[in-house]
Image 1: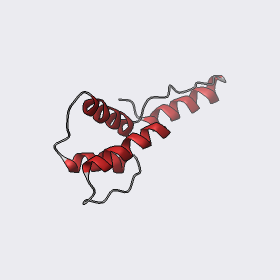
Image 2 (image 1 turned 120 degrees about the vertical axis):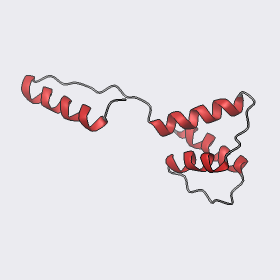
Image 3 (image 1 turned 90 degrees about the vertical axis):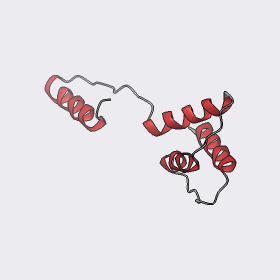
Image 4 (image 1 turned 90 degrees about the horizontal axis):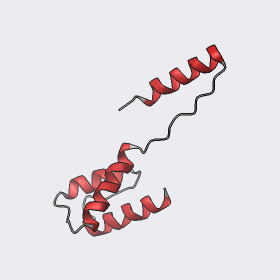
Length: 85
């Protein structure tokens, strides 16, 4: 994966040197991709066995999650967060 800071520096340098405006390709953030993979797996009939992993994905999306929260509730919140993105 490319480093976003490095890509931004290269784009700025090209812009200054050659007057070229380079629009960076917008890639999905890794946390969004992990959340989408989780939801796809659940929709395909899987059930997450590691509640800590589900909570970690939710926290990476910026959600506040209690360690005592039910996995199903956290998954519903992840679905809602993905719907807003």
